[in-house]
Image (cartoon, rainbow, N blue to C red):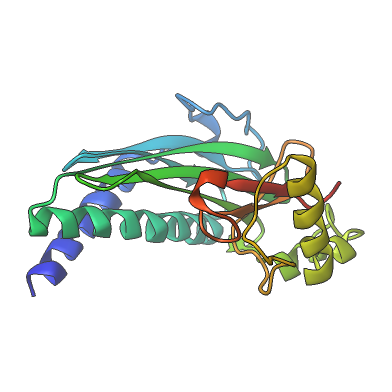
Length: 231
């Protein structure tokens, strides 16, 4: 019951901060950091939201756009992932474990059709051998706010000619080729991925990147692995 109450309070704090920070007039809003020129009403305006408590220092994007249904869907998706991190923070607090965590973001691509954001998150518990970090991405379709998965990307006008790039065999080849070129050690016996990567983002040139976390396909020492699927 205690965890349920605290989780509800965290959600209320986060939603309140989003509401307070959201600009009343999207086209007149000014982004303090991660500046994006989005004066076209069809495009979103991105401003910074902040949360600081219990060792957590989070900066996250708040989306404002004329299409309010898409806006709510995008912000809801982002808030859902922030709540996961805050849940870890709360668990540590209840157990008496000192922890620290952080979150920052970068808008990596913006057009009239798509918005892509990359998030960088870290979490450290006192006494742990090392901190854990987790980078993840979003590719949002602005017409309805949907967060696109790998097998949906080719349905966009930007990526319609690249469907073959996003099939599992092609992704596996890209992983093996690029990790070999960069001399990144993978697990012994690794021959390719079994499931489509979930963490995706678009770079400034519109290339799709897949992110593989520590321990996904390689030992911790190999770090985060970022694979460009369009080269």
